Image 1 (tube, rainbow over the protein chains, first blue to last red):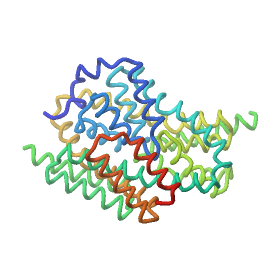
Image 2: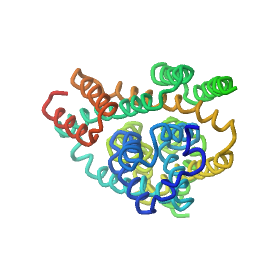
Image 3: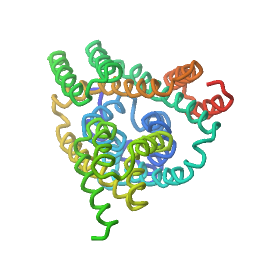
Image 4: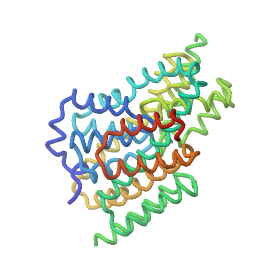
Length: 189
Length: 177
């Protein structure tokens, strides 16, 4: 089978130390301009090689259907997988609490610099690139995971219904999961 | 109860109740947070709310940290911590137990089926969120070029995204995008 993160915990995850876990999620939290997901994939898949692209997207898939911010859920599951409940707590803390301090500092000075045209232009342009980081991450995950035709159809439908038609996310998820599960079940028989 | 404690308790109760219905993340409950914070409690104006949202997008860290900013605006640093723990705590606990339960089904055929079904949908939803952000950010030809360049670079090279963001910011200052 393809999935290991969902199945038995691979030895490489159990070998992660608490400080490595904390440092990795801290890095994601501090660098995550315009969205943490591209950084999570980069750190976990490219730099640390803790998960493959396919394993990463399988965990993210679970995180998306559970309530709460996807990336916080990812920290909970990845942290728990490698170092149990303490690991989950460490990963979430690194992801949230230190960046919150930084963000409050930014917030205190933001009003003073927000009117500066240089700051405004730099942020506008960086936001355009940040959107590309997320689109590029999705493209890479797609290329690496190489879903079968039925997966391309449900994934394509998710993009069109939510991204272009702006239908309510909850209903799209419920309907598409039902369709996708039936399709996978038929294919597995 | 002192006024501050009262506000902190209000934040904790309101945000933890919303946490468990936030499927799709904080963005899914943002309209409801807006209703509570602006319309019901009158803690800030709609314009202030929009500014905090924009700030959370700009700042490092998960975009969900907008709830910490709201708490900070309402009740200072204590408000920021209470709001964030309330908004992320219950969903994180639910996530932990959901994973523990899923973990016990390791050998189940159904589990593999559901996981294979979810993966492509996850990619589609990530694509949708990137596309939505691009629509908001791409107000000029230069910005579109930046988005496309960053997309290609992330998809097909191993360049550090810090460079992409830095170059983009410089291009913005230079008036190119």
